[in-house]
Length: 370
Image (cartoon, rainbow, N blue to C red; front, side, top):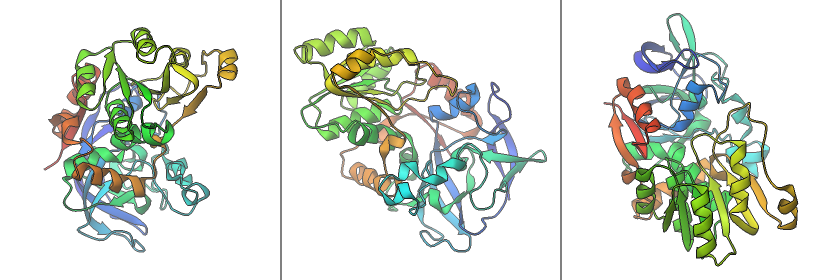
């Protein structure tokens, strides 16, 4: 079939709206008609080259929609089912899936190649070239063919537009607080960077029972929004946050700190570790350029104060369990999803959506399809 998609042809170029050809699903694959796609910062990392991926590629890795067709052997979903596309595939059989770490599924090795898991043959093409798909999904298109391992069935009562956000940003942020940081009731938590992932780390910390949640962001609009999602205090930078946390905890400092800025840098690690207490945990969820190799931290205090530095992918979440769980929390009024969407865009406005993100105007932008 012919459809339209936002394609990145070269690093540093804007997204290009192209007519593309899409093939039918083969064994183990699912064809989905998408209702919406989130504009996640990770796709911006493709444009800047911070995430190296095979080009050309159709962007987008947050999507929800309705199954239109299934290939041979697909058993977990059928035509007409409502689904969320998980940016991390989960096979359910590898060592990591079988030990409760679906976010580290071995199928993740395919994410940056952009080639279908089933047979390594492009489903999308344009201008005589095969097109890869971001995180094996390519949700900057109203239709996609994806592997069954990337598809999670959801209840039909959940609005598909907000369900799209749970495919990456919401689950990543919430899981970073609840799982990776292991926030406990009564703790003090600092969230550094309150964009689409950070505000959901705030929500996760709130749901986990944190006493103090300090949201750190240079953009006043994002600090205001963080308060609406559960932050108890805000600061424009880590220096101000350091003084605030010192006062709030009588000098003991924060139990947990979570780094969810748009682009991580090695210089951020030392001040993040400084803001946590003895035996405190600092969690890095933000993406850094692949070339970033230098990290500044005080190794002496890392040992003597028994501090923890912890990486986190997809918030250490299990997509098949946690995507339905989060949508249940939404349905029961515990998790805010509708309020995350600052602006909605049509596909052809994708570049404006990312400019608005860079300008700090959005908590989340959302592409909505007909």
